[in-house]
Length: 392
Image 1 (tube, rainbow, N blue to C red):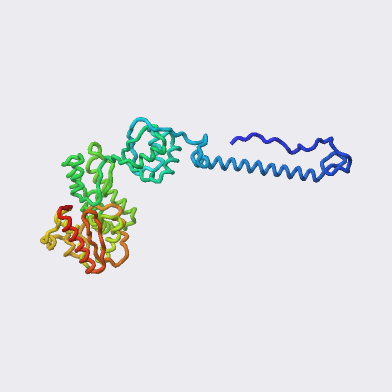
Image 2: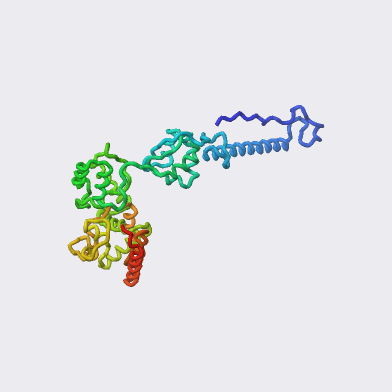
């Protein structure tokens, strides 16, 4: 910062020729020079003035820094330093693409490039002030050109976006993911070949079986530019990345995915996942069968529908966890990160059972004793009797 030179006040005292009336005048000497007391007062005055000047400069600098850090606003009042912002209400509709994993800085750059907001500074202030801003989703958003930054952030946070690409929901099987790719537009023959050759992308822990190793999320791919073999490779690589990020020991990868796949198929609410994981661990520790019907169903080749008595009694189904102890031989679905985390962090407790007592809402209750479990089963049967037309 350039500052104007300060005036030299060090010699601005009484005129040298003024001496008063001889030595009788307090504060002067007969020689006309200032007395020691005058010089002390002069030096004291200069010190006070210097302190005041420094204090003013510090205050100005501090207010300037405060204003700069608050994007040109001083105590909430806009100053000439404020970043440029549009007054609104906005112009024509346009679409902007927010990339996967974009933070506020990236989003701001995208909006400035498309003339949605006038400046990054205005966007940053609006982003920081809107508690919903961190929830802005990646994908294609419809917005307006030349919008006030606060309106742009609010619109992005509220938008339902067209994410495009391939969306793989949690809990699908490999067969369902292959069908989804074909339905989305990937050629059936090449897609089937990609799944037949998927073993080359799997880690050794998978034992050649891709079930559980295709991570569910939205992938920025399309049938016109991404070969199906690349798509399945991306899904496997993402699973490995998520296992590593979750802290799963490499030798436990398959075990974690098996547990997570059971939780994924059974849990309807986030808070149920670690509790289910705890029940699984305690039943294994006590050498109980797991009794998880989602696994029995997977072994029949289906993913929905009621199990018949013959299917429940079928010992040839190696996924029949009502009969066979331990975990199933492979995962039964492709689990998301929440289920992976639950599999690695089972909840403590004494619960040994769970029952989904309302198929429509997914409400699940837990029990410690067999008597409590039977009461929950009766509650489920009553719900089924009250809702005869409900189907999975």
